Image (cartoon, rainbow, N blue to C red; front, side, top):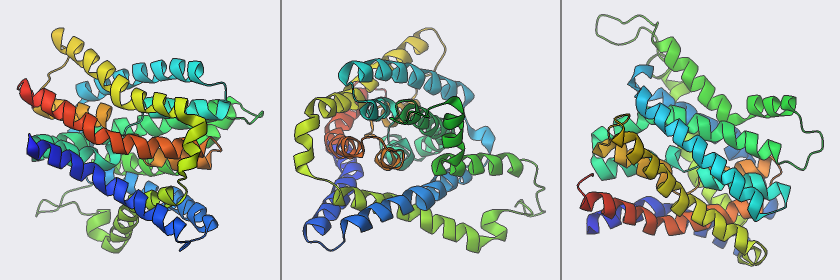
Length: 335
């Protein structure tokens, strides 16, 4: 039990410490408020697309994706999203907060801590299975986030064309799309006598791949530090109801809905709930809201104050909820 708690803590604590560092840098006036905003833009437009691409590129083949599990996860996330839409409209009348609350309901940090969390729970086999699930889940998270933030924008010029424009221009979706295209093209590249591809980005163009890896590694820590730099405890007072609801939606409601659907699917023989699958679901349903959700909210003119607070408090409290889920499933022999 202690090792499970230790891993959950080790997965979340770095997030909180980097946010704290950013907050201290702001208090000590090491960086200006304008610098924090510019660095956020850099992470969103350059580091996160590289991260999305590298995550997909590390898959050996597009066929590693378990189609049945991927379809289940997408259907369950759609249902959680619909519930989040209903709750967001009940919780606030402010349009720029509705998209943020919807994000909080369905969008987990699967891309960043999903892989190491699953590996810590079920070993290297779990990590491989989780890597294959990143493509469908992360694409869903980003596409639906763009839709939610665009539909509930204060911009009077809202239209389906604007949604499509935001999707095409979204840097994270661009990175994901590039990764999927490369995976598909890889299937048609000939193999040399030694078993390696005759052409690959990592093998033929190592300088380019290394650069992408550097950018990918930079994105999350930079974004967390910048998030802390824009964090203000006084901001909580005016959004306590929305913040509390967002935390409950992400850390309590989403796991309840997700696992309830999983047990129902398993009962009817539609899904096998092995340790790797349970680990993936803990990461998909139980991990805190994605760090990039706050950056995306800021870039798309939603309530970035609320979005930032949601990331911080979800990350803090998820240490306890992830620990509870891990202990629960370990105690019943499913992990």
